[in-house]
Length: 265
Image 1: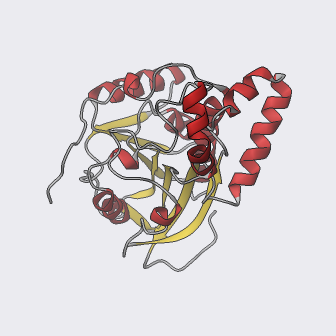
Image 2: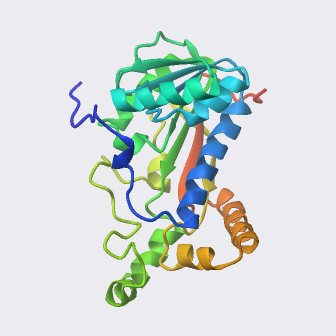
């Protein structure tokens, strides 16, 4: 297997610079909550976060009694995970590795998840095969992926000429549907449905957040009273939940292909 462009020096300042408006702040926090809630609803045991970043989700899961493992290719990000875990007095085991070659035995983990990192991997198919290999027959794989064909992107394309001409939005030079240069593929609903390949079966999928980074949306939320803005964001999130194709982020839950469908406990 040949891997290309694996970023082993990824750092926090590579994520985004500039002003963070309420819609983007909500998306990041809601995606974290959704990932934790989804994993916490599964059978408790050993959980692995691949592309773990600062491991904020793992800290919360460790506090719930999960045996938490973090994998990241970046020494900088693993250092952030160490500080996060120490501050919260959480026990997280850190491993420097790439998602396409995971140093875990077959069937050794109860849950493998990857939040907003899969589109940075050199080979998503290799990672999904690895996740299927290391998860138990009764386990689950949880993927949270940015959707570059959501409602915000679809509307944004139509509004872009006006935004560009009037300079009404800070994203006019980098609209929300543009794929960042460090992404290796474009995430959207049709692609999500194919992620499992021959090894995993899609069990559940739902959307998180709606309209994030659409021209004017974040600025409107900032101008409104906080209570009203919060209600609007949560209402949009509830709409997105049952419409993953339109949402800003798609969360998908996968089970091994050999496992019959069973109720999670």
